[in-house]
Structure formats: structure tokens, C-alpha cells
Length: 267
Image (cartoon, helix red, strand yellow):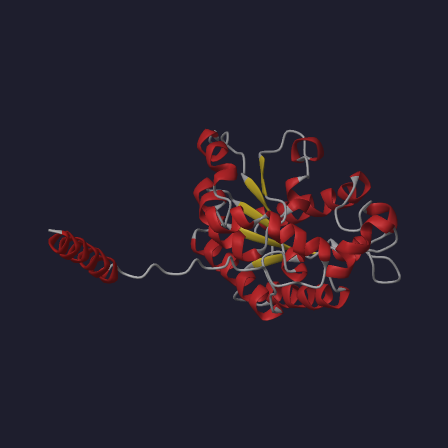
């Protein structure tokens, strides 16, 4: 009797072990990828804080989706203009600096040109503006979404212009603004943005806009805001990067003149 019980028990154990052996092996849990260090602690912290954005809504299409749907068509005779860019555009209160103008702000803080390409259709083309003013590139130089070569930034500039031109939208390309390191709070932003790279990008933008095929206008904020050391004038940006009220007051008439010029059809 005991022998039969032992046999049955052994058989059950054998079957259980066999069943377990046939189960597919479970993969070992994968370690979460770490973000390569940029060499700038502040930038590394920023990138880490943006992982959800980079993985869930890289272009941040959700930011203006509802606002775009609620927009009213321009009044007869009005020329819609979209200001498109990063935080320098995002914090620019267009209604205060351009009162009564049908200007639309579509800036998003921290963005780079790859992100702007993702949302260009939704936030510019589908709004049917007459003109788009693009101010971008400083965050590409900083590496907000990873290291970028100047050639890749320039290719993104060209792609944005070509998309606009295909939809009969006139393009004004703003120069990348200078930066400064005159105050403690401006050190990080300055360290991440090489003045030499800013000059190189602006040189490329100016030449691109001057080419017959681009049909773009170059808006030179840089020359009006740079000091004799090649940096942003100290009194125009409290953090060395973003214009303050004095900085925007310099930019306003330059932007207005550029808009009037392209709407008048002048080269």
C-alpha cells in the first residue's frame, strides 16, 4: 500500500516538474536606460525631468490643440501671423507688445527644432497664417533633446521653410539671440550655448535667406542686442538667455518691420 502511495506521489511530482520545464523562460527584467551625461548638471536634470514628454508627446502637440480648435478666423483684411519658437517666444506677451494685432503665439519653452517639426503642421500650417516668424536653435545648441550637429539644425531650418513655402506661408527667420554670463544665474545657460555656434548658425541662416530659392526673410535681432564682447547686452536679459522687457522692446519694431516687408511682397 505504501509502495503505491510513493509511486503515485513520485508520478505527480514528475508531472509537475515536467510541466514547469516546458514553461517558457521569463526574460530577466531589463535595466532602465540611463540618460548619458551632457557634462552640465543642470541640463542633465532638465533632460531627466522631460522623459515623460520625450516618450509620450515628443512634439507637445497637446499644448495648443484646444487653443487651435477655438481660434476664430481673421477679420476681413487682417493678416494672421504666427510667432513660432521656444521659450523666448512662449513668454513673449504678444497682446501687450503688439496691441490689436492678429498675432498668434505658438512658442513652447525648451523645445528644439526636431520637436518643432513634429508640431509645425498643427501649430502653423493648419492655422493658415500669411506669415510665420520662426525663432529657434538656441536649445538645439544647448542639447535639450540630445547632442545636435550644426548641419542637423540647419537641415531642420530648411525643412520648416520648405513646409511653409509649400503652403504659401511667408517665412521670417529670426537670428539666434546672443547670450551672456555677466551674472551668477546666467552661467549655466551661457556654458551650454557656444557663442561661436550661435554665430555659425546665424551666418547660415542669413545666407540661406539670401538665396533665391529660400523665399525667406532674415530678421536680425542679434546685431541689435549684442555688445562689444559678442555677448547679449547685460541689461537686456536677466538670466543671460531670455529677453526682459527692455530686450523685447528692441525686438518689437524689428519684427514689425519684417512683417510689413514680407506682406508688401518686398524681397
